[in-house]
Image (cartoon, rainbow, N blue to C red; front, top):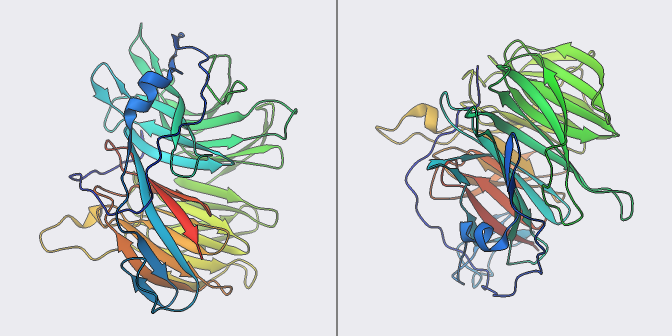
Amino acid sequence: MKKILIFSITSLLIISGCKKEYYKPDIQTAGTGISKNMIIDNDPATLNQRITYVNNVPSYVFNESGVAKDLGDNGSKGASVTLNLIAALYPPTYNGETLQASHVRLIGNYAYVAYNTQGSRYLGGVDVVDVSSPCNPVLVSSVVFINQETNQGIDVSSVEAYEPASGEGNTRVWITGADETTDSAFVEQFELNSMHQFESDQTLKFNLPGYVGTDVRYFDNKIFVSSGNNGGLTVLDDQMTQISYMDINNARSVDINPDYEIVLGGNPGHLYNPGVWDNEIGGAMNEEAKSIVRLHNQFALVALGEEGVKSYDLSTATPPTPVSSLPAPVVPAGATASDYVSNGVSVSDNGWVYIADGAGGLDVAKMDSNGNLTWLGNINVGASANYVEANKEYVFVARGVLGLKIIKVTEH
């Protein structure tokens, strides 16, 4: 398996409700340059041509007891969330080739967006987006990974970042994916400059078992990386030296919190607490499709493709059984079933759940304190929703070659 498949459909607009502001944060330029294996762009004039800001229109409001269509409907009760589409971020290009958005990570006031290319081509990249101004995300740095002499590159499947406390150093970024030069999976570490920009190709790189790295997380000074066929879970220290490795068939995703370390495998779906238990959970049968596990307190939320999303309470049983589930989207007559699958899931601190349902768009749900999921509604994001990353303030929806929709969140 070379890489994760990403599907795309025709672009449409969705309604939004965030007032456009023309203030942009002050951006300094560290320079634009070409190194041996990466092309760096830190020029605000060119970078922000790739962002389109959206004018004020009605907002989506989702409520625990139903969904209202605009802000004027005050009839529903309970907690609610307002979603305003504020911008679209279009992918980088290289010599006429358009990259596709594959993954997003929100850390502090920055979003880190990963890109790859479908098919046999290896061509990936990473964007760094400043989201500190509520309605004005600003692209501050972009890198495309390609050796212009050999025309060989890397695909990026997943991205992670760590922002140290003030005065303790610069932000570090990790990427994982597939390397054309070695025909193998890898994980690589970069240090950004003080302006959160790529500046150098002086990196630390570790070759992984398998053909493609699928997910990467940083926790407690360790890097956890999953890699696909012929791979597994690799754990590295912060000097990129291997601590441990566990063979896991078709490892798709990994997540860690202070209490749990969980890995998702595929063909079919398996949930692993490495070295403790292995639980077959179904779904995730497409060998090259993206599937995600994300932890929220003691719960594991798992996007399982054709079997939708399942919620597991990790504290109740060994191995756990699902406490709740939501089905994959309904496949319209004449449509391709493999386009209507749950590719990704993300949950905010307050239990708002966002599901990337491929051609089915973005689903919004609520998870209660017992891990039960309630479906609230759906948003058409104008293309296939391949991945989603959310926190209390933003939802980033990756849409392949059409880039990202950036949504502002207001929780009530």
